[in-house]
Amino acid sequence: MSGMTKSIRIDFVSDVVCPWCIVAHGQLQEAALRTGIPLQIHWHPFELNPSMPPSGQDMRSYLATKYGITPEQSARNRAQLIELGAEVGFAFSYPQDMRVVNTFHAHQLIDWARIKGDQALVKMALFRAYFTENRDVSDLSVLAELAEECGLDGAEAQEVLARGERAADVRAMQQFWLAKGIDSAPSLVFQQKYLVTGAQGIEGYTELLTELHDEHA
Image 1 (cartoon, rainbow, N blue to C red):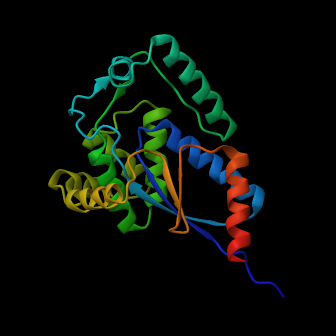
Image 2: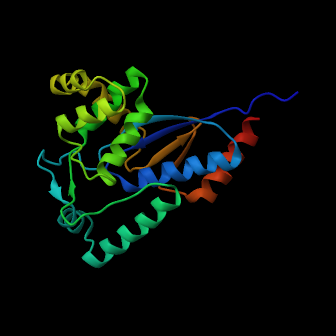
């Protein structure tokens, strides 16, 4: 009699304002459904914009300044992301006044939620809050509301963030992954051995999961 299918560990290094991170996650989940292979996802912090001021920056000017992207290219990119998101059940919304924000406190909330046992729930809530609901995920009161919506103590969450209780641990984790040469998001490390960057598509992840499962069967 064969045993249960072994889960595959994935260390997922990402930022909550990284659209390709949520696309990659959705594609990965779909691949897991297709293959029947369970995943054990561990979320790790990466800041796309570590020097972003608390006030944030208009997204269109940010993209033009950082990447040299024209308004036309930006519009095409948004259309592609909306389409890819829809394929995996995620709704992207890009209002004209959308801003890029500092995510250091958001990562601290995720780390606190990890201790409470609700890391994945909070991570997904942050993705939806930013990309679907257009909420300011740098605002401590918004982060407290999200914690509450995830069944956690919102007041406690706000106190933890205001005191910076998880700040040193988050910085240490960021340094850990940077020291391993990971300098972009999404970066996924499978079985603590194989690094895959960017969103690989449902077929790409299906093939990869199958290969890893056969290797460890």
